[in-house]
Amino acid sequence: MEDYYKSIRPFYDNEVPEALRQIKDNSLIKAMLAYAFPESTPEERERKLLSCQKVSDFQIDIMYQVVVKAIEKSISKFTYEGFENLDPEKSYVFISNHRDIILDTSLLNVALHNNGLEMTASAMGDNLLRKKYLKILAMLNRNIIIYRSLPPREALEHSKLVSEYIYDCITENHRSVWLAQREGRTKNGDDRTQQGVLKMLTLNAIEGLSPLQYLKSLHIVPMAISYEFDPTDALKIPALIAQHKGEAYVKTNKEDFENIIQGLIGKKGRVHIAVGEPLSKELDIIEAEHQHLNKQLQAVAECLDAAIHKQYQLFPPNYIAADLQDGTYIYNKHYTNEEKQQFQLRMNKLAEDDISRTKFLEMYANPVKNKVNGN
Image (cartoon, rainbow, N blue to C red; front, side, top):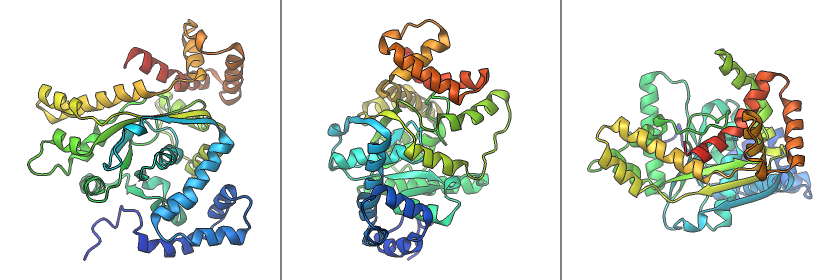
């Protein structure tokens, strides 16, 4: 039988041992294992890696341990809420704001595992997987590969395949899925859902269900992840400046890799994940109010944005940035003078000119405006 999803799917369990043998000598994999298991010898780490027989073994015995170590070393406090309201017998599509290439989903999986829930599959762009070992690592970690820059006809067929695979994950395989609300990370802190993400999900709408009733069957859950300090904030500024100047931004060859490493080890302060309740009544109301699919999907996107902004936990740097940006200091009860001074030192160190500082402030201030104004 043809392997229908082969081009996009993670590894099957029976493919795991061979995949691990292919990457066991890679320097990044060795460094990752040394980071997670510093007390073990190199030989013990390799045995631990090769002992994984299933994808779930790799996610729990290796990646979970790597992320727990990252939490210990780079996060002052990791909190989460809403998971107690999820039904262990159901699977969900988490649609989330997106800050960090790897850590957003990795921290979600830690929260799920700590709450006795299955870890997710998650979408990842192929632009991050150009090296063979990175693609293998992604497939071991249950990533669904999203191919970027395809010609229009191929892009549509690919989107249909991804849509169908996600539906199978939810309905057949009892596997939740994480999707970013937009293509790529939000660099300026203004989290907005792209209608195209929702349209992709509806491409597999099954007979007898309207597009919105089909979305309802996927149990869509809004998720917000908040970092007190974005460990990749400085790395995002050049792209924001290029956008400000109306110039095309071209990544360096090592940029994605640098973002992944800095996201993992960079200091983040506090981090919070909040998951809401599945959109159900909201989808019924939207369907009753709008007839045209594009209007419906735009309304769903706005509904998700409102939920994500409401769930987003604001930290002192957000309030400080909003006050520095506007000069009103209406949020000064949310931070101390010492916290303000530390934030300004960070800004002046990472942002060298007026445009850079403006973009740096936007990055931290936009979540305040979205949450306070209900945008």
